[in-house]
Length: 109
Picture 1: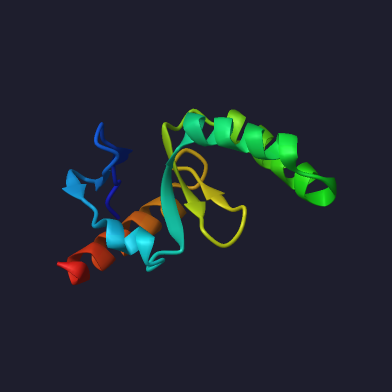
Picture 2: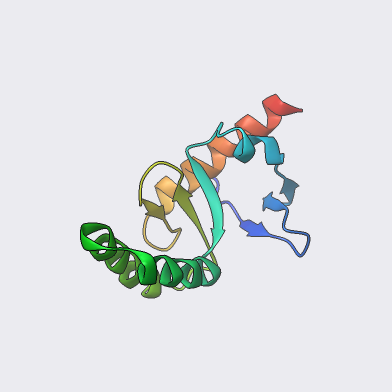
């Protein structure tokens, strides 16, 4: 299985293995996951926690703890749930998602 490199470049374009990913994949929710810069997402999560209440707030705090303990620069974030996939934590799932996005990208060309 290929070990994929995922990043967001300075133009905020999503890149996997040097291939620019078509924004339509994420805009049209063709993938169940989006690419997130982990530290930037932590900042967003802190803002959400300040506005959240009850069980949602507790779930977000758990997410914050999980994300803060990672060293990954980029993660995949589920667009439907609070699931996060980091290469350091689950390399198989991370690479499978990258494969799926690359496949979708090929079909969008």
